[in-house]
Image (cartoon, rainbow, N blue to C red; front, side, top):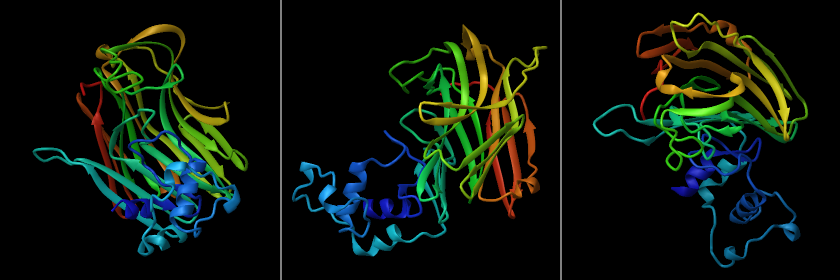
Length: 323
């Protein structure tokens, strides 16, 4: 079962393990990961000359080997779609689902619901960038560090993801349980970021008020905003939402700034509206044909539409909620 899962999620076009990932310590495969796969496939996957293989002593005589029946999944660049329930809800409910869609040029994966912890990859893509790999990864940053009490919701149909981000009132700040935020945080910067990393050559990106248009080698990517709210419904202060593009420490950030300024308290218990809804589309420019409907009441906000004759929908809390 383990080898089947590894093989099914391997993206031959980029040599990466497709997302989403429920536990992840690095976004790109390490040299040790690649060496392991090279040994396990007896060189059918080749990342290094044998004399330069970064070998781990603990592998000696361990006997790991990929079963031959799964080998073709590692070697074939093809369209592939996976949908798996990874956490069921007791007493019914939809549970949590992981969806992965691959083409020879990119792999796109998302969870139906998950926190944006830095050890998870709730929305993750790998793109073949002229023989090198570029990744895209959604983050919520509190003063530059991943914020655990941001919650991701999505529905994915092949290369198209509808997704939303909401917030908890009793989750963690940098860790789900070790540093509970007790309803509020102190922050000088709070933002959503679609991070682009790996190979940054052959990339163009243009931000506008409603999203961004990105081109990675020959793969177009379109990010679109459908709903943005953070504050109190009775406030007279309109937020001038906009996306911006930033480069720092070897990555490109497509950023939606929620707050930037003097350090202040953000009390999620006193915020009546905090919900963001977006769509992300890979490999096509057909987004113009997708016009979703938005429904909102006091407790929830819903986004739904039809994409290639398949219904897409998400429902999420309209304001911060308890975990």
